[in-house]
Amino acid sequence: MSNRRKFFQVAALGAAGMALSSRAEAAGSGYVIPAEGIPSLPVVGSAARFPVRRIYCMGLNYPNHVAEGKGGFKAPPFYFQKAADMIVQNNSQVDYPLLTKDFEYELEMVVALKSGGKNIAKEQALDCVYGYAVGLDMTRRDLQGEGIDKRMPWEPGKSFDQCAPCSAITPASKVGYLSQGRIQLKVNGQVHQNDDIGAMIYDVPSIIAFLSKSVALAAGDIIYTGTPAGSGPVVSGDRMVGTIDQLETLTITVA
Ligand code: MN
Image (cartoon, rainbow, N blue to C red; front, top):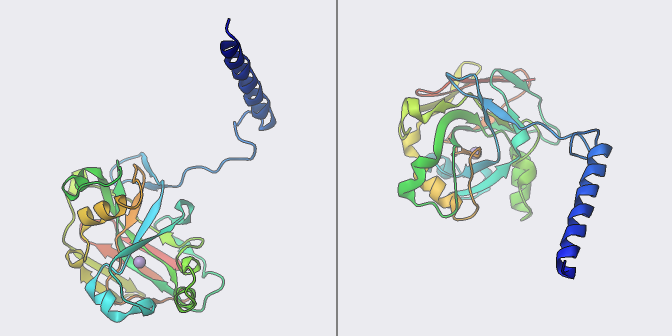
């Protein structure tokens, strides 16, 4: 046996030995600390759930929201992220978060992907779509504004515990490509946002093509597609009801 071959055999044995001892340390789990479960969302008409990998959010994707100058600036559509475990299930409560005096809702259509890739052509983008849902991009608006003013990241304004409520996903196989339809948010029964998803600056294929130029998209990714005009504050006890034609209604209460 060559020395080179002997080296690889010994190295392989060593690696196997290490794997065995770390498994023993983690009481058989394969991890040195307990591993979190995969965040997921229900699927309309199915007992199986949709596993969430990453959450992308489009900013400034409706002309009337750009015109409001919410967040203090105007720019072409762009994106940011929330962590997958920041998902909140439908018909539940969110706590009023720490560090803010201006906790705001943004009602958005959510697109769930069944496949992905890099640099996806607009013409192929809809092949990646598993389905659609109704989401709230909850925002600590004052912290977002502070980040903008100080030229610091505005992540604390957008990415925090319980910031991503989302309804069950309706498969595209049931509703087709959702390119038009009423999007409406009521707070305590009053209409606060009311538009049509057809008004989006980047439509769903354009969003997928745009994001995939920056990062590799994959099955399990969900994309919040931006909010129309009318986002605003909620306080403890408020009840938000978000609807988009053909999708499950999202109802979230602020604890
Ligand atoms: Mn948003």
